[in-house]
Length: 339
Image (cartoon, rainbow, N blue to C red; front, side, top):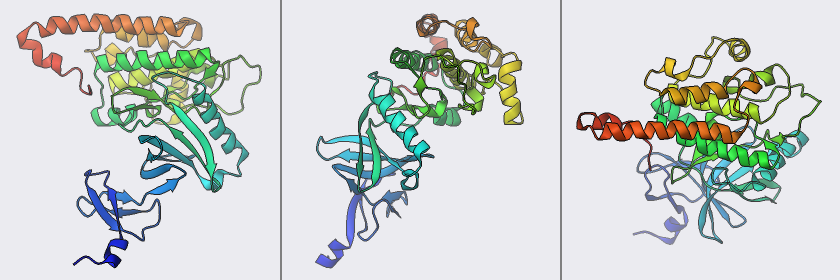
């Protein structure tokens, strides 16, 4: 027979692995994990942060940890990013955290992660935002290597539109990469991590450090020339290039050689890497990754129009293929993550 002492010693939580409600030891400290009795998935002891119940860690980075949480006031799932306590006394880290919060909060776009609040509780700084926990583009590339062309074009149009909105608010993202494009439960891509964002106004003062991810960084940033929205465009095109071909734009044994290739090595057009890619898509990505910013699309509208035109031509080809019963199976395999 179950006694009061037994009930007090256990805590019922929902396992993030098998989805069932299970009991874990009640003396497990908040945010600590215990193995699920059914599937051994690490189940976290929830912690209440004001009205937000933190239920499961879903991502971790240099600034802190992101948790799936439940807003007990509004009854909705959210994401809560806890800043590492040891960074609270680091002015540079605090500035980055505040910059990310303010940058995202100023933007209202379907494909930019929404910020709900930024607060502090018992000396713990945290950011509450929209939940996008269905993986990242980086994870999809790792799992599937090549993403279907139609899906890549859809992601490209949506993220380019998000960057256009940021530009209207005078913001550059400065770190576009597959890991910064997440997906929500509806399959919508969400641009995240504005921690490196800064004003889009030209500056004569060039930073000592070159910010960005080496595999997608624009040549002008490497050359310490003026950085503008065309640098973000280059990085987005490089990200799409990786997704559609399964290869980063430039592969080399060392990071220094990768960085040098962005400046000196001609880009291999996507359709020459993977022959099944349509030429309109290949041309759009290659143009957006031109070495000289002046040779790229001169607005996000132009880039979006090129991606949309490539998408339309691809859809026409798919419809024709579907009308041919012998090719229906091949057409069905072109889009794999529809939700």
